[in-house]
Amino acid sequence: MTVSYSCFTFHFSLSLISMKTSELNNAKLELIQWISNLQDDKFIQLMNSFRISKSDSDFWNELSDQQKDEIDLGIAQLDNGEGIAIKDFLK
Image 1 (cartoon, rainbow, N blue to C red):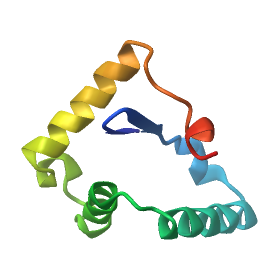
Image 2: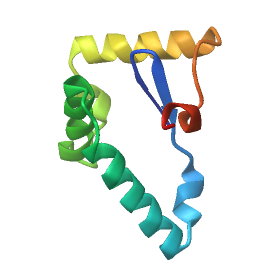
Image 3: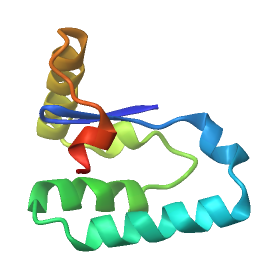
Image 4: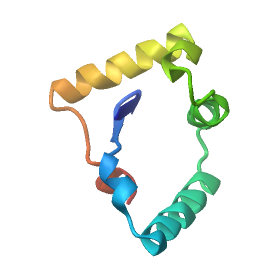
């Protein structure tokens, strides 16, 4: 799954499903720490929309037109080689 936000694109691998319990718990703790340090209100709102969306519905339908445009822009930037790796972004 690819999620884009302006010039940042995040790639989520289905390999996370096969993580050991301890690896998964560590990943959760790292995400909690990362989220608690976020300062970008728009990104926090986007992440919250993922959280509250129904699992049986497509989150795309819950996004505003502006959010969809930003995702499309991020995908276009990635296609043009303008993306950065998540590990570099998180540094």
